Image 1 (cartoon, one colour):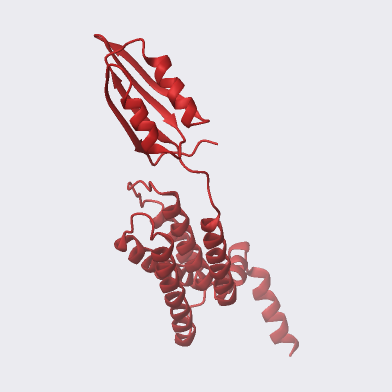
Image 2 (cartoon, rainbow, N blue to C red):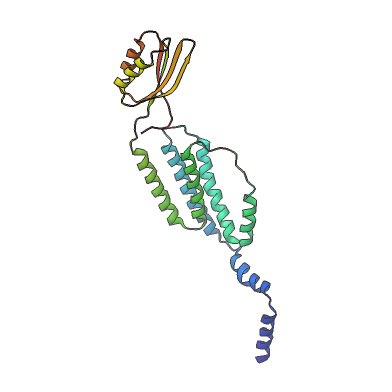
Length: 238
């Protein structure tokens, strides 16, 4: 017994730092025995939450431009992310290679709508959470995000201002135009003023309720060629 123990002790003494690192670190983080039920459960929960995100995107974008392909991409992105996270968990070597492989991917499509960016992060985070087997956290996070988005969407906002476009042959008629505007609107701001060849072109930002009366009274001015009142989708001014 003493001889066997001494032989084992001698082998341990001959192990260098590299051998200890491989044995205690790499072997501890390398696990190819991922069970099929665990994989199916993770992907199943991810699929359910991905469908949830798909329908949430459809409901929350009902008032704007709805892109079905983008909604499908959100669901697929969550599933793909979950699969990547499960792959990374299986081996630290694969995770380092995955970082290098994904670092060369470049997306050049600009995300113009801020809400689309929110849904992209939501889908990716859901895949990460489910890939890490934190199913309860994924469900709770989806519910909290949905409630927050719906509540914030219901908050009323100030009515967006409109643009009053005036084309007149009277280059000195700006004062008369602004007098009429101030009688119908408490807020007005000249956005553009152009005077050329005996013509006056004005673009005025106004917030008005009696739109028809404003246009009729403005049209009655002398040398008034045309008056247009249009709405725009720009930022709301408070």
